[in-house]
Amino acid sequence: MDIKEIQNLIKFVAKSGASEVKLEMDDIKITIKTGPDTEGTAIQYAPMVSSAPQVASATLAHDAPQSAPVSSPAAPAVSEDSKYITIKSPIIGTFYRKPSPDKPLFVEVGQTIAEGDVLCIIEAMKLFNEIESEVSGKVVKILVDDSSPVEFDQPLFLVDPS
Image 1: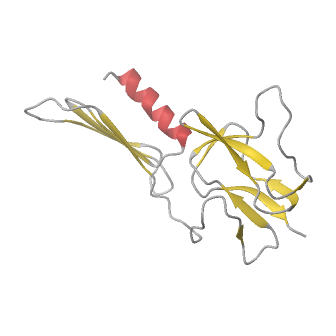
Image 2 (image 1 turned 180 degrees about the vertical axis):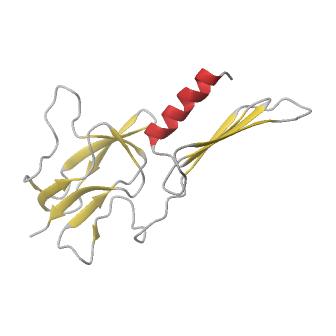
Image 3 (image 1 turned 30 degrees about the vertical axis):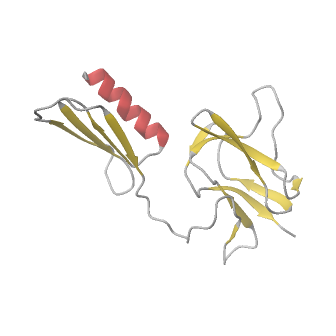
């Protein structure tokens, strides 16, 4: 693995939002850590000594602290200090506000939604998953930009149920 490949891997990890990536190959071991507890990106590059060839493997780990208890996937969570309902991501993937580039947005701020309305699509491993609303109300805020990566249980929408 040359320096260019390592730099591309660092850029990919930074864009994905993962906090730590470990990559072990035949003769090297690379650990890339990012996040609030590290300054920038930390890289460990250590040659591995082994008697038998190993199969390349990659492991992603997400150790972000959770500020609220985890609710069931796609279940809305009500904040104590807010009258709004937060709709969270049920999976890790890429958030899309439209079914395709030439189609209109699923929802916009100020739009009234009903239970079962499709709010967005999250792409995970080349599968496009429609995320439906489990509440009725008015969309107050969209918390994620189009085509950006999202984590499990990350807030996506704020909805006013009144």
